[in-house]
Length: 281
Image (tube, rainbow, N blue to C red; front, side, top):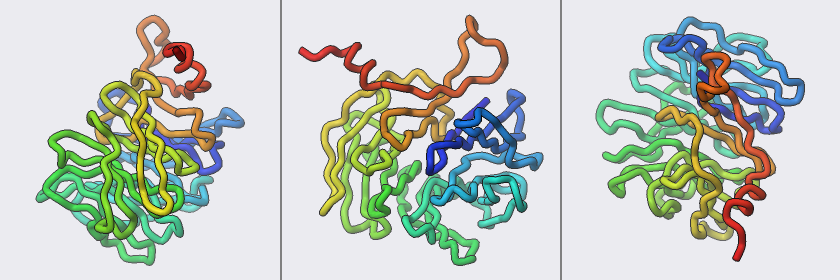
């Protein structure tokens, strides 16, 4: 099984969590070269390693691991050199999601016994303790920092169901906007910062946004129905640099299944397909 795909900053590589045996507690991080069509295993610990993300320069991979008894954060060079280094300690389950623009702060989701999932930050100055960023009695997770580093999207259950919100980053109390309208989660920014994508009840949605001088968003539109693998609590897709291609995991059907693994799917020319399905009047 594949889950939590993330494209490298240059769009040439993919990092993903892979579990080869169904029901196994041993997950490993793999990197796929999309140009050379090669693959290599990055982590080798007999534990659950998952939720990988790239550093902004593409040099390292941050991931969560159960190897120390909890679910703390580690990182290692993406080229396979060196060794795994532990970034955090503590009893809470943690998963990495993104970076401040200067890469001095790691943004993560953290689950505590008192408030369930919240959004926290970790200073990369050497302190292994996290600090809460968005912490309420509701569930907040899937944080995504905008490309310019000034905004953070996330989803929360404060409206009684999961919806996507945007706040200024890191000064989250300076404003708040709801982006989704009929439920939504798993927000991902386009690489130019002009759109937000999320998974809603009708499929993968796109919302035009403006981030200067302040934030505003337009009406969500359906890009295509969602028919891909969605492992709860994990990122299930990513967006290419051009904003026109999407990376997802698709489950094989009995008719074409030749192994137990799902396959990776890159959706190309989705705009042309949308025009074919919904012709202009």
